[in-house]
Length: 136
Image 1 (cartoon, rainbow, N blue to C red):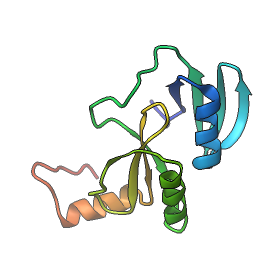
Image 2 (cartoon, helix red, strand yellow):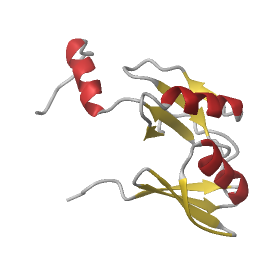
Image 3 (spheres, rainbow, N blue to C red):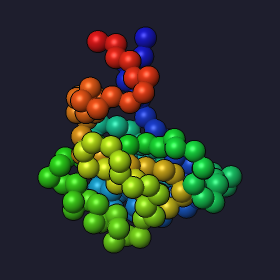
């Protein structure tokens, strides 16, 4: 049985550029770095940044993305840091809680989200969408 998410790996074209973004802009904690990659922590989540010459030049067209938790108190400051760093915003927020959807320097679709599953479910129960089914 799965016990959780172990780590995320992002293929990057430029390790130094990705490192700067994840550490200095997003505020991830640096753990280890080498010429072709590095490890950072986003809270307890291990994020691997690995150089890959085949990394795409822009975002994939589908909705797939990784969402990082941020406290409601820290959300405005981090959102402003992302905008000031020139992060491309790829979607407006339409869900409960504050969210900012942005691209990292390699076009990975990311989100910072100041909410949790319990809040999402409360919102969905209050305003269910067509075909929604709960299992609790």
